[in-house]
Amino acid sequence: MQSQKIKMEQRRQAATCNGLKKRIRDLGFARVDDPRMAGKVDYRLPTMLTALVASMATLARSLRAVEQRTGQLARKHQRWMGIERRIADNTFGKVLPRLAHGELMQCLHRLVKAEHRRGNLAPTGLSRGTVAIDGKNVATLHWPDMLRVLKLRPDETTVAHATALFAQRYPQAQVCTRESGTPYALLRVHTATLVSGDAAVCLHQRPIAGHTNESGSMPALLDELKAAYGKTRLFSLVTTDAGNTACGIAAKAVALGLGYFMQIKSTHGDLYAEAEGQLGHRRPSRAHANATDTQNGQVVTYRAWRYDLGEEGWLDWTHARQLVRIQRTAECQRTGEVTVE
Image (cartoon, rainbow, N blue to C red; front, side):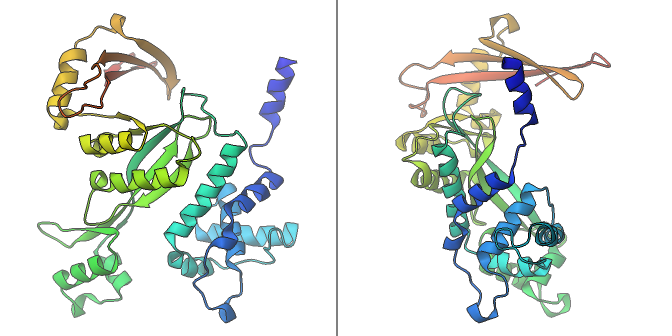
């Protein structure tokens, strides 16, 4: 019986038509404001957003591919979820930048909460609900792109004027200047991902304003996560990379009732020195946990050591309770070469 159950699970489709319909309804696209004039709308906004989700679920990687998917859906399924005919890619391109980011995030929150109520997001790989927070650069606009967005010609403006105008119109972009050459702009976001379950589900995404950095944007991100999911008990632990690690951010997480696990590096001063002094020279035989896996032709071993800080923490980190060291050893199966991180 057990083997039959496993085979049935392996044959089960990861995404079904009915399952996709159910989750699109959970998103509640009808609650997103349409910025277009009603008399000039050929395709209702919920239909367009539904087409986007269906296209992404079938691995569409561009708006041109989304256009192709809408044509395929219209021919094969006839009015599936309101999609009657092919929708041109430039139709999506015109409306998507005008949608309110906050309303789209609320759609995501509704979907996540519905999945949580169904019991599909319970912790499996970890003992408690855990969110990993990471800052990413999602787009880079070089000088020609900046001028195109501003609708300026190079011979009609100066670098200083165009840079100031871009920062004014697009405060979510970080304008970077070079010592020599033209400036460019970075678009960065914080992404919060639930990593404690079988599927790594995105819970929230927040733009990092151009005037600050990842660390400076973290308190507001934690507030938004708490406001969106505070009553669900979906997670109780947040993890960050070194770029988001700061004592004040840790204190903020604790004040919101969350535990934290933050990466530290040599740039974190005395805290890193304490960790290095306590855990830097421990032998593999004294590791508190070991795990081995095969990755891309390498045998990878992870070892973990921990050091108890007591109830008073360390230095300004009075809320810290443990230091943990993770070592990654990779051995190439073909050459026998070993690398240690």
